[in-house]
Length: 140
Image 1 (tube, rainbow, N blue to C red):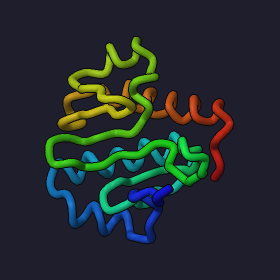
Image 2 (cartoon, rainbow, N blue to C red):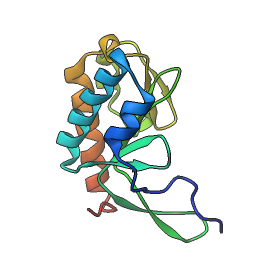
Image 3 (cartoon, rainbow, N blue to C red):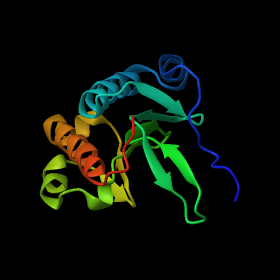
Image 4 (cartoon, one colour):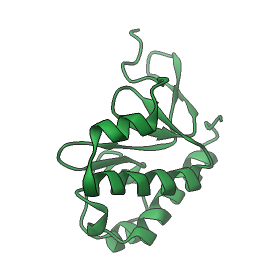
């Protein structure tokens, strides 16, 4: 089985965000770093060239190999902020109160943080961390 393309790197999160964002997008990313760091209790680390992840869990691939993956994370994509928070399993009541967003698989897509309720977003991120802790696959 081939190695995962997106792996933990030693790149600086601050350097990545400085290079990849500006203006309001940079402020939104700084807010996401605070929210996800607080929810996960873990520092921000780079996965691949464009994902900021928090915490660590062991995942099992279909071929039987295990790998390390973040618990929650985000990427400042060109079209939107992509949040890796297990959105497809998120409480529907919270998603209904969030504000303007899209869900695709486990990802939550937001154009800008001003489009959503930050308290609800914080609850969603925390709920994602809690769900993954309960799954028993988390390892820091």
